[in-house]
Image 1 (cartoon, one colour):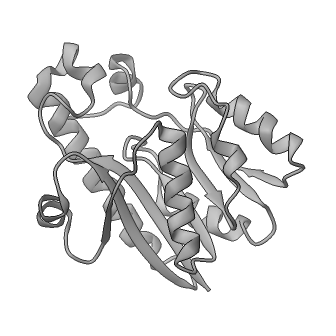
Image 2 (cartoon, one colour; image 1 turned 180 degrees about the vertical axis):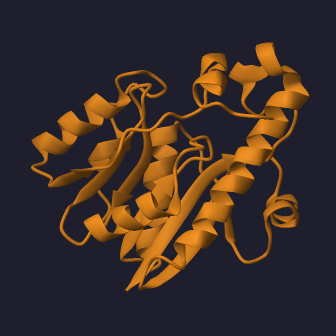
Image 3 (cartoon, helix red, strand yellow; image 1 turned 90 degrees about the vertical axis):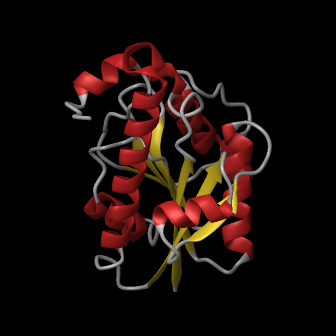
Length: 204
């Protein structure tokens, strides 16, 4: 079996990365924090390779910059894809569709803004997909930091009020309507707002 681990991120350009943190960190500081968190996310993806017993492909789906800049930044052992158009739901649905069309068996999408996520949690999500249709990692802000599927289920990405505290609950409700078997991971905090920096005890 072939598993795919996708990281959604963007090129760390000042003024365009982590814009909600700019009031407290400044444009350069917000971009620097984003760069550090993305690098940590990629490191844990590489560590996950040693924790799963199947072939693991790592992909970065990016916004901003270009493929060459991303490769120079994060390395040439990763598959890079430009994020599709549309809201985050459309972009995630597209990412899953591409992965499954490339014969991936199990696919996980994570962001780059959950500093307490670790490779053990990701490995357990892959394991859960053998017995569940959907795996979700709930975030403390009402969203989710991880979503995992073993087939494309486009309904999970429509009718969601993205970037709100309702995302996780709305996704759970859709899953219930579809009679999906869902596994839940530990709740973790991600970093989107100024208060999250201190809540996660980040140093930058």
